[in-house]
Length: 404
Image (cartoon, rainbow, N blue to C red; front, side, top):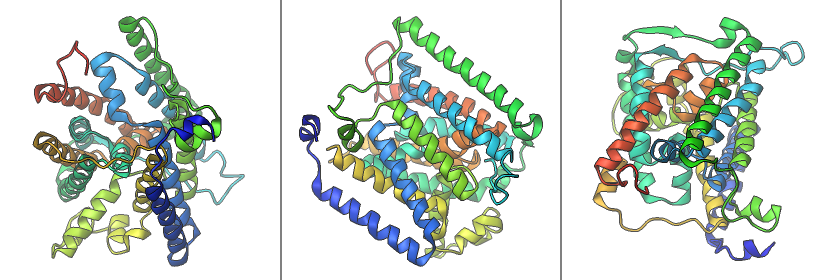
């Protein structure tokens, strides 16, 4: 290894614990279920490593653009949507059906209505108060951030409450599911979507140049001497994350038959906890039929989303320990505990109403041609603006015009 790697204080004990956990859980899943369940867990591992080493999250990127007009995070997210759409549209559109007749995939479709509009808005606020999105919460928990463990706990509570109330929200106005692939065909739909994404990329770039006269690039501040050092110990440039998340997300689509998701598992965990405490979640409309009912009656380890989430946390733990960034927080300020609680509740409740988070609804929805993903993006970003203003009001951040 190069000298850059030698300067990193790797937490060897955590590396060993994480590595042994990966091996043990993989073997257990293969033995108790099947090889695919173990593969889903390993997909979660590499997703966790990617998210952690690249520090790739939606929350911070949005906040920097809202406050400072720096667009590097948003530009990386747009590239992720562009590349994912290019891979997803023909597959979801069944272009390969004649060549691979056993390849069955579906889009992350959801109704375009009031529930998504309100849910995404609440989620956007929750992102800024809770300190992370769906994927961001998981990888920062893996990093050992105690405050994010609180956010995750109330994320689960909020998702459970959302599943209880969802039946009522579904009675509110909606135009139903709208698929660009079904309405326009996969190729015209893809051309339209890529055009919008390119315009959006250009727009945020122009905004940043207007404020700062130049664009930040995707490079990292501390670049290790060798490629292998950087691959193992990090940090990764954002474009590595874009490529990794695109490819691993596409593999998830091919293996599972639907796009990568995160927050369904949180509601499932909460419903199972409620049932264990004597509640009767099985009688709630959401958990009474279809896959939710099946998942509620099975082991959590039989659920693909749950297994991948566990993998993300452990993968991020491994990456953080290798990078010398595994650092559980000490004493937390009461204000941070409060925002973690409120943010977590808004994240969970909003995600259930909006049929997903930044991964399941935004990335999975848009990349597979669902119009609800675009509504989610707009409303969550508006919620993010409100959330940033609340952070300033609570004196978490300095007023606009000053360093954050």
